[in-house]
Amino acid sequence: MPRPRRVLDEQIRATAREVFLEKGPSAPLQLIARRLGISQAALLHRVGTKEALMLLALRPEPPSAAALLAREPARAGELGEQLVAALMHHRDFLRGLVPNLFVLRCSPLGVERAMHAVTPPPVALRRRLTSWLARARRDGLTRVDNPRRVAEALCGTVEARCFNAHVGGARYAPGNDEAILRELVRLLVPVRRAPRVLKRKAT
Image (cartoon, rainbow, N blue to C red):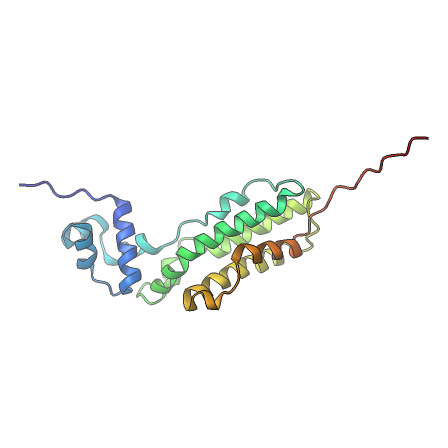
């Protein structure tokens, strides 16, 4: 008798996500099991319930940009680059998150119930970015007056563009994300330049 196929947790997660995004929350467990090459009974033995599988597949992990913003703000000319890099990480994270939220919203779980045990990623990143901007201001690297409002503006821009692109495609979010974020960072997070030291003329 052949041994049952061994399926890794990550394979279950990835396949279930693929099916839920294709078919919505009513996707049959039998289809997920068939793509995994196992029986529906074996799948349920591993995950417990369909709700548990949906949470495993669609509940977001902490935003990747949070780790970048845990570092100390860079000095002088590197500050803007560090911030743009973190925002682009957040954009990539949101491109995966937004479709998941649409499915969860239409499911019996709902977004609120699915997320009750975790801080929503957009909220978590706003807090981390606010703290990072406050440290940069404390260190004299930027002239930001209100870190919380600037964090809201930057994160809100990224989220709106990702949401619009998911709903309507590129026509709903025209322009280059990175170029737009660079311009916003330049305007909203002005960098303090070190004063120039004038050389005395020889007498």
